[in-house]
Length: 473
Ligand SMILES: *Cc1c(COP(=O)(O)O)cnc(C)c1O
Image (tube, rainbow, N blue to C red; front, side):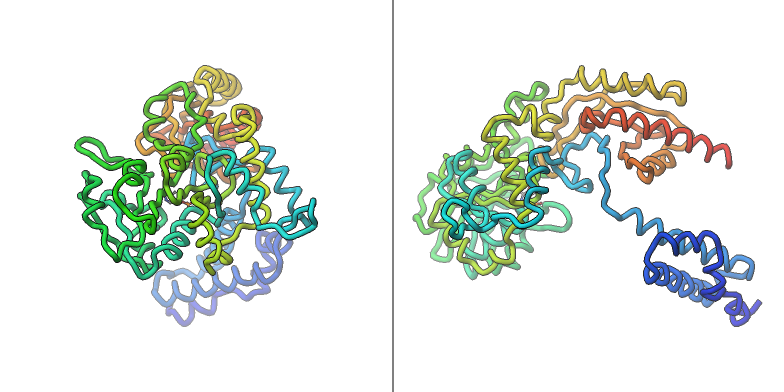
């Protein structure tokens, strides 16, 4: 059949609307949305016919309907919903990194309506936005002052632009990293109008390399945590303390980008204690007490708070940042400020063990994880072949590359692990696990105790559905 005659088989909008499946969509979604899906599906069909990929008129109607249904599923799949993270990756970027504490969540809800974001209730006068968090940070870390921005990437841009625009920043070649999502430090320098003065080699950089690069053009010296990659073997890098101590004028700030800053209270982690401490070195208070002029880190990595970038430092430099016009574009939302206050309060009260999900996940006892795995397998055994296996959890989020924590997982063998994974992702309680060969694993380190029961139920339902679907094939 000619393309021209095939085009006549494209159904009208009215005929499509009479199809039960499309009628259901029209009840569930606002009209313009469904209309857009229909138009796009028809447009695609025209292109298919033009490209001679469709030969039979009989295929046309069903193809258009499935394209509409596919668009609906994509739309629904991107809607943000609570998810059970059974991947074993504690700071999972695709799942929003650090899970918040109950206290932080309550604070966010409390700030949702009118709240004194820039008002001191005692004086009735204006406050700096984030004033309370800044005071908490000073208590926690010993810093003089702080500013808060949207994330650590913003912190890097603000600092470079405010302190070094039009001049040079000295940095070790081994630290010019890509953090992820295409965020490459050399590009960030360029966009802030800063020239990179690279020193040393990929694996070895000495204090003398920095010293001999200091010129009148030097605006700052920066150290960047490797975050998501590991240098091992024949490696030397000066510590932040050594950089502070080298011969330089007070006009040249030493900047420490810690990335995943930790407060130093995770030292009790039982498993790989040694390596955890070593890689997280220095902690935030260490960086401050070593004398860094500015210390940068994320709020939603090891700190366990909402997404934000925290800049601590000497008052003189923080004042410069505060006056920079970019500051206004990067300032924090009141919900984030409220969540951060709640999180910092937990750190100040040293209640991380009992209140902070990130700390609980890091400290979780292996035997306790195993017992919860057994609990779930007992419930699943009648339905599927499953067992409890040792596995490795990861910190994720560009923290501690190559470091893992020993854990346990529930492993389920099934006809199609990919299909079971999809059923679990798209179910009423979305669950994310890890696919390994022909099985799917659920690492319980990242699953909170209150989620054990819902997880078991979700898996049971998904297994039944998967069995039905594979029987239907
Ligand atoms: C993660 C990270 C960043 C970026 O932090 P965001 O909060 O994601 O913007 C910057 N620098 C380092 C060293 C990091 O590890």
